[in-house]
Length: 482
Image (cartoon, rainbow, N blue to C red; front, top):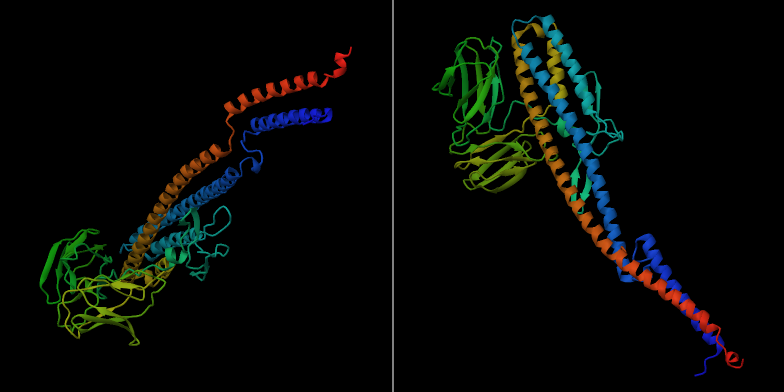
């Protein structure tokens, strides 16, 4: 093969240019810190790096969402903490108002403070976050959820809860519907097992709370009366007049009998009576079945209706509403849950064919109506002078306040759980993001030790090629003819 002078020159130039390009590529790697200057350097690795980068961005967004969720939940918890403080203040004022020695003017002064607490609670219910969105409006965050007209509060939000994605498969609710927190509060007269009430003939200032079942095994459904032979002693009688329990009365101390506890507060007069009546069982029942706790498990499906649980046979039940329509039916097993239209209850024992049990969901009353009713009673010159009216109103209000405080407490507990989930999710995302970053670094970052060594070798090689070309390019046959 004949090599012309031109070909020889071009081959040397190409060699120098290739060495220069290789050196420039290494210099670019050192300058940028990246192993791949263009995707063509390593197409497979470049594709993987792009996927890792997208995953890192997504993880970063999850962490940002977690920060936003934490801020929003902490703000909600703070608002509910202040609401709980206001409810405690109202409870204290209500107990003060129930003092028989107070005058109408004294009670009206207490009502003024209650109105201030009412306004503060309304303000807390309309709390906004840093973006101007309402916390308790459900998904309708741009709409003020609560408005008041003539002391009646109306809710304008929805019953949804906003959520943020804080992980690949983890959504956290960042708010609670104001309807659930403030409006949909069970009325305090029914705990699902029994109802408590004060006799209309009571002349003292005693009030009875909702009560609770502490030992279901000892609870015997029935009607019980708590009477006061003296102002400092009490007796508990069953429907036949038999003595069940007695003791020394201390305001605010629990009275316990047959697996239940209830508390009477204030100053009952001699002869005052308080009733404790179990819910559900028809007087004509012949079996040993007893209706257990009735509770709301789905407020969205709840209808304010009464239901009848009947037993066509000892092993079958059916539930009908007031219109006579069957809303649920099934095989009966003692103690097994019976669910229908947002309610869960159960029957224990052995009901006879034809036995019936009536289920009435607890009435609902928003906390604002509770405060308004209480304040209105204390403001009115006539009702505020009647100790019996005041005692009755205070008793009902205290039960509703207890239920409202329980709802606030449950909501705050749920918020705490969500905050823990957010923290856990952020820890996971931080670790995951670190792993992704390390994997991306392995694929895309330059190895400086190797690159510097290559740069030195390539520099020496380029210089040698350049010097060799200079010397060789000057050689000619004419040099031998001189």
